[in-house]
Length: 164
Image (cartoon, rainbow, N blue to C red):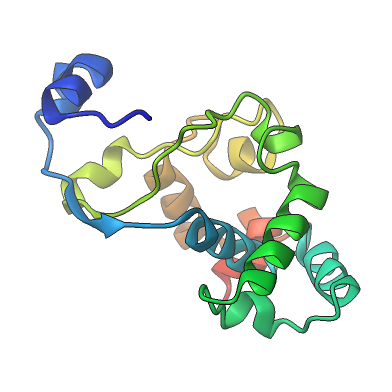
């Protein structure tokens, strides 16, 4: 398992990133919690929402499976994992190809100054995140562009979520 100390983070991320605000660990998060959060983020998207809802129905489950997760219910956790596997390839295919098998999930807080360092996944030229961020992949740039002109995300899957 990979568990980086502050000094290891400094080494991996470089001195400019390490000098920013302090990330505060709130506590561990389980794989089941990560999967639920991932599905919640996509259940209303124009790109994946129908798929997530359809796959929930195939498991004889309603949206509550994702919106009101019971992490003590093994069958619910298995259903959510199967859904994420089917349309996103979790844990090691499609979107998750090359994803480390020994990832440790955590809940964290960070200082507002750190927002400037957050980046979207580099999904390639012309992708949703490329367009939203104007090619910078910076989250703050995507937020600025959306705030100035919400139509920038009108045809993007993230647009439905951002308009809530």
